Image 1 (cartoon, one colour):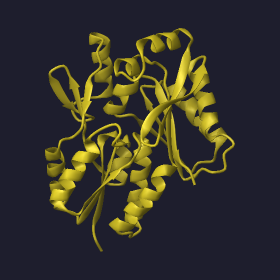
Image 2 (tube, helix red, strand yellow):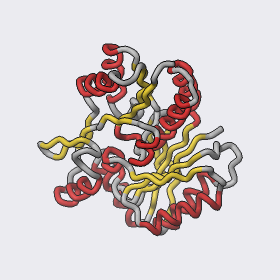
Image 3 (cartoon, rainbow, N blue to C red):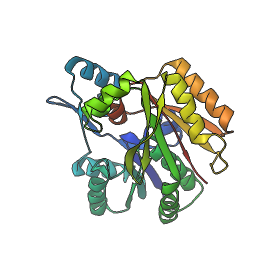
Amino acid sequence: MSRIKITGDSTIDLSKELMEKYAVDTVPLYINMGDESFQDGVTVTPSDIYAYVAKTGTLPKTAAPSVGDYLEFFSKLKEDCDEIIHFNISSEFSSAHQNALVAAQEIGGVYPIDSRNLSTGTGLLVLEACEMAQNGMDADEITLEIDRLIPKVEASFIINRLDYLAKGGRCSSLVAMGANVLHLRPMILVKDGKMEVGKKYRGSFDDCMVKYIKDKIGGRDDLRLKRIFITHTACPADTLALAEKTVRECQNFGEILDTDASCTISNHCGESTLGVLFIRE
């Protein structure tokens, strides 16, 4: 039986424990601060980004792994496996997938997948692929099933502050200022591989977060109740406890997985962002 390795880029936002449990390796994206370049989760943390923005007022730039990075990453892994299924952040957000494709063609036996998603929206697919490989499915079968699941992933976040989105050019500074004055907390959702603004909530972050979670999963009978991610950026412990309590009140998920967002994701949305991510039936 072919030995299959499941991998991803650093935006899949799985915890260290989950990556060890499922033997998932990742290739880091780059975070560029001024003239210095750092590897997401390796030589830079989200707290470093927040400190840099607070000090400089500017947002770091993110960059995809190069073709050379992927050639090195895949080549090393192929020493101990026959095939690699590799997950990337949506190709609408980064050239990571395109670069992985170029490297894969040179090496062979590598299947890059455009998740059309980000963060644990991609992470959900990674875990599904790991379980399929453990159950003896071959690479072609896994990639076909993942293609079927991709449109069923629902990823969204509620944003506490819009200044990071404004600095990144994803909304105007005027809109960000107005939202701040009015205590508006917009929902950002991933649709067709792109980000768009959804419902806007008003009030304290915790109150808005509870409404957001109830809107996303409350009263629905079309969800796969196997697992759900609560993924966040620097949220207080009581906020996370409230989020988990709300999820439990809404649905009986088998696994509720709490994960911190990577540097790449944190760089776009700032502190105190929280999302629930899951798969529909």
